[in-house]
Length: 326
Ligand code: PMV
Image (cartoon, rainbow, N blue to C red):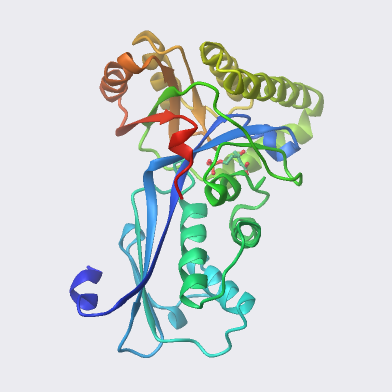
């Protein structure tokens, strides 16, 4: 792909952004309840900006099979939108000649934050190329604008956890709160391999909420309690409580109708293989689930997930140190 064409070009700038998982509170967070999310550095988006002998901006994003000139893309294309917004913010009126390579190991539409990670890494790379340093707040706001144009009514949790690269306790519209991890714990992530659009599951939950507001408000309140207790448990190092909380959160997500037979199967398989608790993570209907495990059982739970149909697994350690790198 891009390598052959760009091999002699001078690499000017590189930037990356991690994936993420939501531990507790997805969907309810859209209705102003708190949610907890952590970065996952095992998967990431890397953006490289190279000098180009050609006029204009050439974009290579092999993961989504995109090899195009900026000018040939609609200005509403998420990548074009990010580029144009950064140029505007940095006061660039004349388009420079560049090649932009976007390499991602985050599966698309799977609840691991691939869209927000592309936005954040691209904003960081371009602003650094333009020698216009942006604060995390500015990067986060810009990435959120892009999320809003493409995901309907996003809460903003994805762009926030990915921009700050720290565990966040997130409430829509409120100042960003990061939290400490008192004792590290191990999560196995299992991918159903089914891509599902968050916009659709969020839209379906909204229709159901409009039809049965009382029940859905109750579900959201119960999820909010789980997120709150989850945060306290993580901060105080009482991570053994998290398994039960995950199970309860998954049952409530089933009530919201955002689970699926494949997700339920993986959640069940993880529990049977000895996980302390499991739930879907993110928008649901497909994408990923997460399981809390004792470190020694991580491999066997991951194997059980593969036997139950997971297309891939990631074992990740949630710890204070693990979160401190940029
Ligand atoms: O982007 P995903 O699939 O991880 O889902 C984001 C979480 C939701 O709460 C379902 C939506 C949102 O905007 O917060």
